[in-house]
Image (cartoon, rainbow, N blue to C red):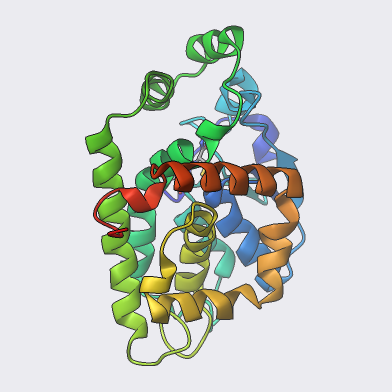
Length: 270
Ligand SMILES: N[C@@H](CCC(=O)N[C@@H](CS)C(=O)NCC(=O)O)C(=O)O
């Protein structure tokens, strides 16, 4: 669903690029990466997910599923991060030399990334108050998202976490195999949307202590793409150091307990 019809008069009248996004959202990170890489100016509309701003009527009138990101380009509305990055890349030759299958794989990896992020990073933070949870359940219209929060509060079943870890590992193995021929980037010699689609995922799983040391080509790719200025501009600068430290402390704690991501899905045999 790349471009969607909207009857939202406020959006139709907007000039230039407008992005609704959240600092830590991997789908938002993808879009900011293309914007940074292309040097495009945009008006930033931050949506505070912790405060449940995406459950507001106003935001749900922008994004039909009440998720981030959403982009308006000269009055045209786009949702779905992969579709947005394709739109923003325009006809930039290098960026568009991406593989459709790697973009689809990144898109399909989203739900597992979300589950594992909540389990291995967000669970370390304070839970939202009951009043906040109730308000969210009453006002957000996305039934799947509401069920996800209910499941998170109850604790995810181990089998669900195991499956998510195994599928994530399988996705990273596809990237490792691609890179094994010595190419610098996922789709060849040029940095492309394939790299942009996957960079937020590598960044996210690194925060959880994913064993990238077992995937030498992917590990080297990650080091290479981190050097690009867009990584700092679109990801690091949006990640407060207090949050990063809290994630690191929680990851260490679970590592010591033997309950971190490495203890699932047969990732490591410690
Ligand atoms: N397939 C969509 C997924 C969008 C999505 O799930 N966005 C997340 C952030 S990455 C979100 O809005 N989450 C809201 C929440 O967790 O409450 C895309 O690629 O844009």
